[in-house]
Amino acid sequence: MNRITAALAAACLAGLAQAASLPTDEPLDPDKAFRPSARLVAGEPSPTAGTERHGIDIEYRIAPGYYLYRSRLRFEVSPASLLIGTPELPAGIEVDDPFIGKSAIFRERVTIHLPFVVSIAKPGTYKVKIVAQGCAEERICYSPFPQEVVVNIPPGYRVTDSPGLPAARNGPR
Amino acid sequence: MKRWAPFAGIALLAALAGVSLWLAGRHAAPPALESGPVDASPAAIQATRFEDGDGRGRTLAEFSGKVVVVNFWATWCTPCREEMPGFVKLQSRWQGRGVQFVGLAQDDAAKVAAFGRELGINYPLWLGGGEVMTLSRRLGNRLGVLPHTVLLDPQGRVIESRIGIYHESALETRLAAITGK
Image (tube, rainbow over all chains, first blue to last red; front, side, top):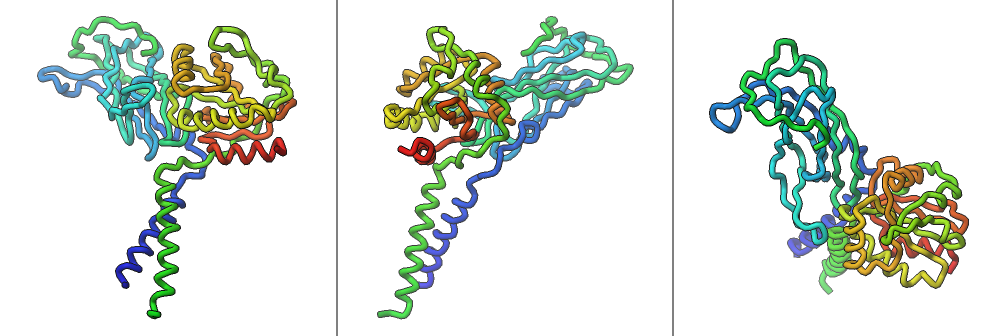
C-alpha cells in the first residue's frame, strides 16, 4: 500500500509542479532573449584544408525556451566599404510546420560566419546591423527586431588568404 | 474497514487532480498577459488605414458601435495560429451580439489569403505595412510581439490589451462581462 500511496502522491506533485511551471511572466525583451556578439576571425584554419577564414563571427546566445528562425536573419555591415559575402549559417534544427512547411531554427547558441570578400580590410570600428525573428516556445513571436554589434579591425590586419570570392553587394542579406 | 482506507481515498483524489493538471498543462499555453500602457486615441485607432485581401482601403471605424476584438498576428507566428480557431468559434457565437473580430497582419497577402481559406477564418483579415506594428506598439505592445489582442468598446476606446495566446474560454468570459450578454 505504501508504494501505491507514494506513487499517487508523486503523480499529484508532478501535476502541481507542471501547473505551477506555466510561465505567467512577461516574455523577455528581445535583446535579452537573443544576445548577439561579434568577433573578428583573422586567418583561422578553415574546415576546407589549406585555407584560412577571414571575416566576422556573430555568436547568438539564446535564452532557454526561445528560438530564432534561420531563414529570417539579415546582416548588414557599415561602413559599407567592408564587403561581406553570403553568411555561413549552420543547418539548425529542422521543424515541420503544418502551414509554412519545413524550416530551421536555432536554439541555445549559434555562430554565423560573415566572410570578407576583400583582400585588405581598413582598420577601424565596424557595425553589424542584424534583423532577426524568433519566438518564445508556444507563447509569443517577436516581429522582426533590429540589433547591432560592433567589431574592431586592428591596424595592420590584412586578409592574407582571401579566397578571391566575387565581390558581393553589401546590403541586407 | 482497513486503517489506511481513508488516506488512500484522499491520496487517490489528490493524484487524480494532479494527473488532470499534468495532462492539461502538457498542451496548455500560458494565458495572455496584460500589455503596457496605451498611447493611441480612439480617433487615431479608427483612422489607421489597412487593406483587405482585394487591396481596398479599410479602417476600424467601420466597426464603430460594436465591441471589436483586434488581433495582431502573422502567418509565421505559431502561437497566433493556435489561438485563431478559437476566435472563429467566438465570432460565430458572438456576431449577433455586437462583437466583431478583425485580424491585422504585416504579412504577405497571398499567404494571408491561403491561411484564411485553410483555417476557415470567418472574420476580416486585413493587411498593412509598418503601420500594423506601429499601432500594436501604441496599443501597449512594448516588446513588439505576436499575438497581441486588443478589445475596443463601441466608441473605439481600448478596454483591454493582451499579448500571448488568448484562450477561447477566457475571451468568451471577458466578452460576456463587457457586453452584459
